[in-house]
Amino acid sequence: MAVPPLISADALSALRRDMRKLRRHIAKAENWRPASLNDELNELISKSSVIGLYAPMSGEPDPTLVPRGQSPKIFSRPALTDENLLEFRQWTHGDREIPSSWGGFQPATSAPVVHPDVIFVPLVAFDGVLNRLGQGGGHYDRYLADNGTALRIGVAWEAQRVDLLPVRPWDVPLDAVITEQNCYTKELQRCLSR
Ligand SMILES: Nc1nc2c(c(=O)[nH]1)N(C=O)[C@@H](CNc1ccc(C(=O)N[C@@H](CCC(=O)O)C(=O)O)cc1)CN2
Ligand SMILES: Nc1ncnc2c1ncn2[C@@H]1O[C@H](COP(=O)(O)OP(=O)(O)OP(=O)(O)O)[C@@H](O)[C@H]1O
Image 1: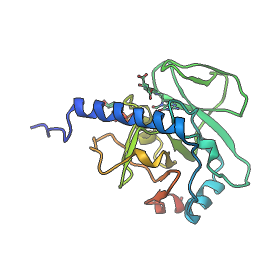
Image 2: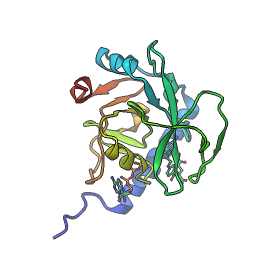
Image 3: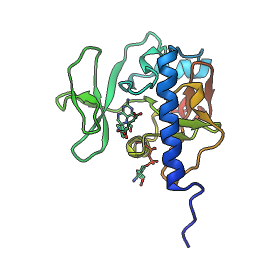
């Protein structure tokens, strides 16, 4: 027998709608700056060589504000392929971008595909054990499931934190979430031992 969902589809869409609205509202009133990162996370980010960013939309905090240390890095942004799969394409500030099927912009197909070792992940809501609710396309969940060794860092407003999100079988939890007030981390051992 199928296990009934802990939250109805309607309740989940209502949560997404409310949290998107909250995110837009806060971003109009406040500037987001990351809280101090803990030493472990700082070290992992500064040791990394390929970073996955995103182009902020609708009140999402800007991941380029997170300190990333001195060592040389390749930057990339998410792009949806013709098959509606997420990939990361190399991107440098000022590079030309093309319209994406979801309405935003993404690096052109001529940009090399890269595999970030640190991914800054956009989110609609997160909870105390670092589960994540995204836009509902499943794009990041699929990518993170297929690229399990990357360090997954959510970037959010503190107000996007909820007590407990419903977890579906395909949901991939985050390793850390950085807000303007806190740096939440867990399971960094997974990445320290790489
Ligand atoms: N900045 C950013 N880039 C991203 C994502 C994201 O969440 N944020 N994505 C994450 O997977 C992928 C794009 N996927 C998306 C899937 C659905 C919607 C969407 O339903 N948007 C709403 C409006 C959202 C709002 O206004 O807050 C809509 O069109 O109704 C957006 C992006 C890749 N790039
Ligand atoms: N690893 C996966 N393999 C196959 N389908 C998946 C996978 N991950 C997610 N999906 C599909 O994507 C759909 C949307 O998932 P979900 O509602 O969790 O998206 P989300 O986490 O909010 O969005 P996103 O990850 O794009 O930010 C689900 O219906 C699910 O069937």
